[in-house]
Image (tube, rainbow, N blue to C red; front, side):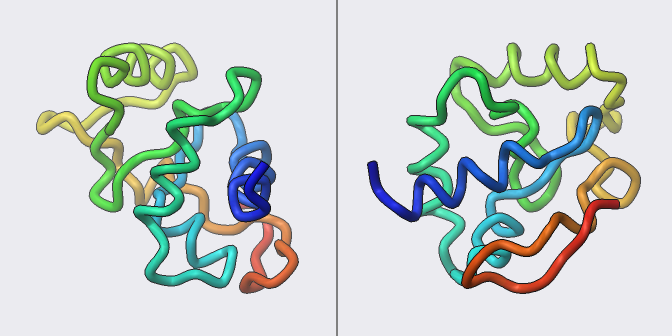
Length: 110
C-alpha cells in the first residue's frame, strides 16, 4: 500500500466520535499542506473499519458522491448536527488537534 495512504488512514483512525476533520487538515498534519486532493484519493480506498465518514471538505460540507447521504446519516447518528445549508459547523465539531504524526506538524486531541 502507498505509504502516504497509510499515514492518512492512521490520522483518520484517531478522529474522535462526533468530530470531523477536513481533507486539508489531514494533509497539513502529514506535512503536505497542498495535499488535500491526494488525501481525497486515499479516502476513496479507505478501509471500511475506519471512521471515513468523519472526513469533510474545508467548508464543512460532506463529500462522497453517492455516499454523501450515508455519510451525513452516520454523522447525525453520532450527534453531529448540520447547519441549515448542509454543512457541519467546524468551529464546534471540527477536530482541533490530534497526536503528532511522523513527518507532520504537532497536534493533540480536542
